[in-house]
Length: 163
Image 1: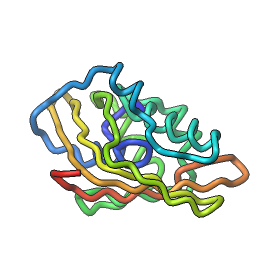
Image 2 (image 1 turned 90 degrees about the vertical axis):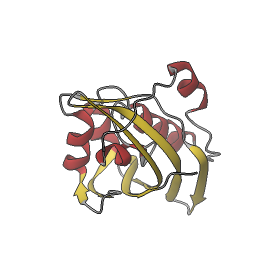
Image 3 (image 1 turned 30 degrees about the horizontal axis):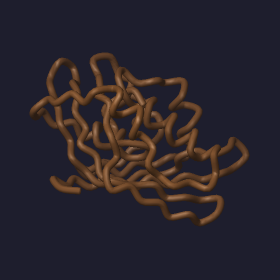
Image 4 (image 1 turned 45 degrees about the vertical axis):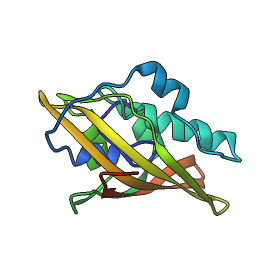
C-alpha cells in the first residue's frame, strides 16, 4: 500500500490515472483504523487485501506487490488504458510517486469461493513527480486463491466524483 492506486484492489488503479488536482492529506491513524471494513470469511484473504492496500501507500512496496499481484494480472484504468502486473507496480513504485493513506468507502464483497470480488469508492491523493494529484473512483478487485495463496488477478477502475 505504498502508492497512488486504489485501495485493496483499486485505489492503486486510481493513482494510475493520476491527474493533477488538489492535494489532501489523511491522518495515517485514520487509515490504519479503517483500512479494512470488508467482512471476509477467510483471514488469509483479509491479510492479503490489507497488505495490498498498504503496499500502495507512500512510495510503494514493490516486494509486497510482486507477491500479492498475480503474474497474469490485468488492470482496466479509469482513463481507458489497460496494463498488467509490471505496469501496475511501476505506476505505484516509480521514483517520485507518493500516495497518501486512504480509506475505502462503501466497501462491498462478493464471495464466490476461491474467487472474491472486493471493491468500493476511494478518494486518492498524493504526488507524482512533484505534482499533486487527486483521483476519485469506484473500483472492483478480483482476488483468486491458487497455489500461491490469495492474489489479485484483475482490477476495474471507474472515475466517479461520489461514492
